[in-house]
Image (cartoon, rainbow, N blue to C red; front, side, top):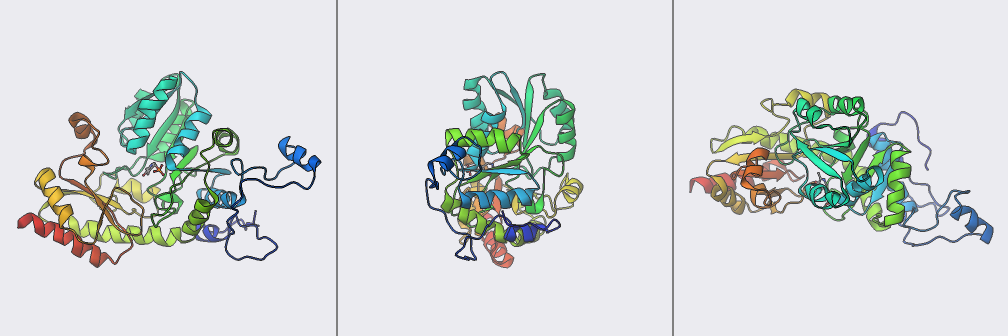
Length: 397
Ligand SMILES: *Cc1c(COP(=O)(O)O)cnc(C)c1O
């Protein structure tokens, strides 16, 4: 690993950690497109396989490009170890397979990524692992849901799409007082805006597909934490079950990390400007954005995050018909459920990302028919506003 100067700031870590330059003297990180590695002798091969000597064997286990990404993200999150995965979902799966067994129990916030619900409810249950759901912001609810067999507490903050904020320190303290681990999906903030490990969380998971890539190109994920839980247990799952990150994707994500700090602050700045404008528009009932003083956890966000993030949502008067009309009237924004892209995306959660929920579940999760989510990109904020104005105009036609 590159020599790391102790007090480097995050923006420097994002550029300088992880690349061990080869004798060619390359400036950009090379893509090691190789499935296996060659040994100098039979004895060296035996030593590597026996674990007596460190080094590469096979790219399902380790690959230098992937390791550069892992070391860089670990440094940025402030963790000892990082394991890169083929997707965000395989990061969450690897944590569950590495740390849980039949009979264990998870307490999770209700407002998590839809496929994480499917993983917990459809697949982990097949192996006798149950999940209970609680409100992200209800600390007493978290406490009541913990059972003797609870092993993991799992949350995403800010939540999608209502941008509720969890008190990571308080939930970490609760987890530890009851012998549980806290896992935080840090996809929406990235280490630039929030470092859950420093707030007491044990493990951070990422969908690198989102802001870490930042330009909507590759699918990938990562798990960050200490050397034992992540470096041994989660790594062991990846090594033996195989959802590892490809070297090409790792290279793309390394390039993403280099500009992550600049981008996250610009996403936040653009989103804050739009949220401030939207909250004064008469046809908008509510704006959900943690940067607004009116947001219920605004003070907590200021304490826990370095900026308010790029995701906002709002409710238009007139339910689904009005929301669809609004979305269809935009001309520049991309109608897609992806987020964390440089291009602004707009989506109707009730009929897409949250379409599988029953009417009761939607009501409980605050997914109303007039709700629209915008993942604010890096275009000029005035152009995004002009496009959203087309949506507003369509409601009075
Ligand atoms: C997209 C997403 C995931 C899943 O990541 P994939 O890379 O799509 O597998 C998990 N958590 C959150 C918060 C996400 O937005």
